[in-house]
Length: 452
Ligand code: UD1
Ligand code: MG
Image (tube, rainbow, N blue to C red; front, side):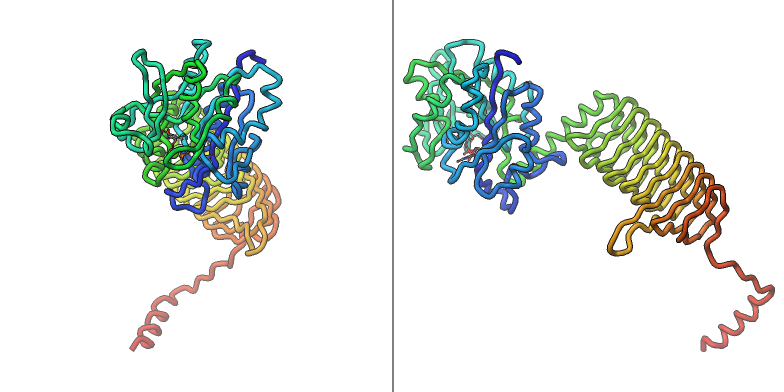
């Protein structure tokens, strides 16, 4: 293992009251993923020795969302400094082993933070051995709610003053505390232990460690980082703004991976959407979580996809819906108003119009006619439909599951298939047509007489 690793403490015990939600703040989603998972994802490439998440009582859902990262409970929440203190026992063994040079403290609601930015903060702390604390500084458009960074003449950080405790002169400072800190692990908990709560909110402010470090002859510095990445989400408006910024970033990444987005601003992506090369996404497509798209796929307008895997050469939409467990193998065509759920469509399968394919397995080269429905649910249980290779399912066929259609079978239009179809059979499962020559005129006369 590398000699200079860091441990991360993510604070998420606050109540997030301004979202007016029954859900803990850090579980609100951006790009289909809870905010706190974005923070963890930003840490991962930096190979932290440990990630500890501080949560409040009754936040089991947060514990599940961050698993396998260990959690500690801070109860009651008495401030950011107190939250860091709560994480100490969980880190004790790791610190005793050595090799952890820094503790990075982050907040669970800064979903836009990137790995590169965390690395910059870490470098800033490590660049000079006398620097005990590096604080992420930012210049937001509206500094009002943030702690202000007070610098001395040489640009060294003297203290952080919370907005509620700041004098008029301090409130005029535009350089604000972005909330993230890198702290020399040798000093971290010693400094945190000395934090008091003599302030406007009667809380233990983590930010006080800067002034405490100075009194001990240690120095602190600011790493000025992009405000956009440090903005915490506290309201629904900020959630929407963060979503918009994240979407821009994901669209750019998709295009860099070799996908053409004809109207990128109309395409919505999940954090884990993955594209191959020469993919074309037409306007107005939504990707939920868990979609993988291979090379040379075309996704046509107004399609909605989640939990789907699409192999090369496939064409999807317009107006297609792929739900979790949809697997489209090479060169599959799924057309308008076709819904696919928990189904594998083998290479070259065509389902071009108006179908529901659920809990099914469809062999390569099979044609699914317009209006085909797999009747997979009897109101209580779900059943599977299995269709072999090179089969032909005529339009408006109802396949009443559980049912199997053999390779090469030909099912006539309008069939209601309730029992297995042998391979290579022609199956007609509908009422036979009756023609009565010349009866049309007589029927009309009869109906006309009834009308008056
Ligand atoms: C904090 C900073 C402020 C900075 C701002 C940046 C302090 C004292 N202030 O203020 O300087 O400009 O962030 O966004 O640190 N939390 C706990 N336990 C607690 C309190 C908070 O885990 O007892 C967590 C919250 O869940 C949240 C984070 O710590 O993720 C920050 O808390 P918050 O109350 O939002 O701090 P701010 O007032 O925004
Ligand atoms: Mg905040």
